[in-house]
Image 1 (tube, helix red, strand yellow):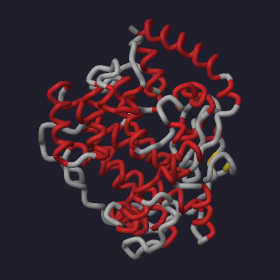
Image 2 (cartoon, one colour; image 1 turned 90 degrees about the horizontal axis):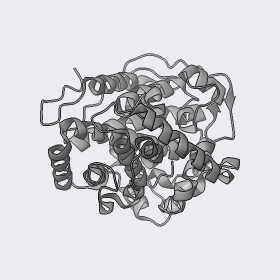
Image 3 (cartoon, one colour; image 1 turned 60 degrees about the horizontal axis):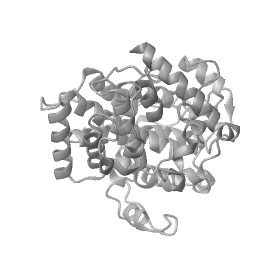
Image 4 (cartoon, helix red, strand yellow; image 1 turned 60 degrees about the vertical axis):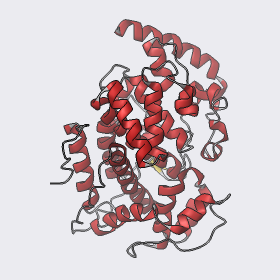
Length: 242
Length: 145
């Protein structure tokens, strides 16, 4: 059984355990554009990025695009996908649209980019949760064999962000949000709806459900102002504007 | 969202805990200093600093608060990378609500902010939207209490 936390001074809520287990099962399974093996390789690459010498050098450079070299990678994924995962993991605040476009020019499909991003950020998130509580990292899951579904959603629009996204109306309807009111951060992964659903499931346990987000009552041991202070501080430490 | 939650609670809190961390003290939020120290240590600190911050938060607010705060840290390590990795702009209403403190807190200087789009008309209407939202959230908070 994955995520069998040893009892310690900070017992983990059961909904968080279930969400983490769900995320691991989602990562291991064949996805929409990537196989289970590729998805677990994405997860593995996020962990390799933290000790990658090239990433360290780029992080220290005035411009991360001025340093050339090869990432320390696992040998499973394409070079543009490796670069995506390493930069997203170690220096996300300095990504640029021209860099994103260069990955597409190297043959990475936007759908693959979004799916790999969805997998990588789940691993980063759960690993950080473990780190914060002093737990060791959970071993990565074994990949499940099978083929990706390769189904692209309808109502995809271009030009509102770097990546194509489903139209706001579509995402709002599927997420049960007020008519047409789907914020960009909810739409961001919508080119690959399975990653959007995985994002939502984990967010509900780690943060709040979409319904709880719109109401400001207390649903956790820390109140809403305390939650948003931590959220804002983490965003600031990552130099993220959002 | 921090601003909205402060208005809803009716508290007289500051937003500089976001930019200054524990140096801002509690910033009007209960255990604010301990929470930001924990967030700082979880994102950037060494294991010893993190252990100290975790123990201090647990002593003051309890173990459930430590787990909840760790979960929020994990969640926003994910959210920032989704925002930065997809190139989404600020939503109009968020831009309008935050337009006055993005510069004050130094957020406008982030490269990710410079890469993002403008909030457009909503930014121009920001002062009006902020005023209406403030009254509405304070009213809703009083009713909820």
